[in-house]
Image 1 (cartoon, helix red, strand yellow):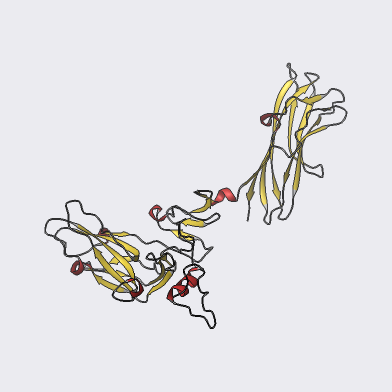
Image 2: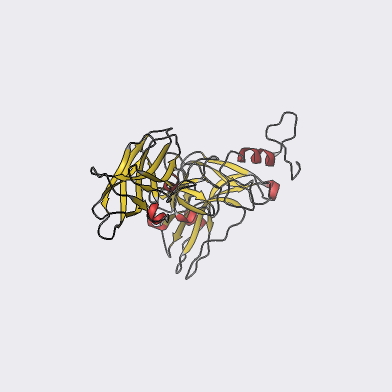
Length: 361
């Protein structure tokens, strides 16, 4: 038997690679288990594919049996820390006589499970192999599912009602979980199969609501938040409030949007708190690109108090692989030739330049 620590590499020429080593080697390619205590474990589940793999359904004319659609999947061994992952296959449609394995009681319902069970004589089982079978719970006034041990992949839960002579689709609850290769997007059948843990950047696709999820920190979040970017309210060293606009304008804030490998639509919002020298002076509040072209413009007057706030908002389509430096600027407008305007506060809610970047096709 191989060492428990440094296991023999899979398919090593001239080495002695036992079954555990082979399972550990193939498990490298499978999605990780949601178990922080077992970093070499693989996720138990069905390989996604056409034809609704592993689906348990009643016969077209309800009978004592159900049918299980063909599937391939992974069953992570649980009876040793180095048991590895079993790769299993149901090669064709299987019919399973539920009511023979778990007969209906005269008074009480019972709950049974349909599972793909993996046995292995190395761990004390009577045989080696995988079989899709019924695991029967006891009839009871309040029935519960049977408590299972060993290595298995749950497929469905079936309620066998009192005096039932057949199994209908309404009696069957889908329990399938899916798995994918390492780095693949995992289809999430239901929230009951949401991994309790995961690795940073792991992706899921929620089949119930069509939402992409990504693992960030210790939680699952909508993946869209990783695609929408936020910049601002100021680059390092900005904003600046020690000068003022007069014969020349005054640039008081700057935000840099770094390049990305895809085009983005930018929603740009600039704010300012201005103190002017006169009530009737017109001023232009502008957000500009590095070449001086305006992307948004707001106009304001000092008013009786000679104090005003201004918001300049605009959109800009930023091509792929293109950085952008945006500045906020205040200058005389409308042919004005006199007067001054200064930035009254450096607080972000007065001088912030905020950019939301949305990826576009």
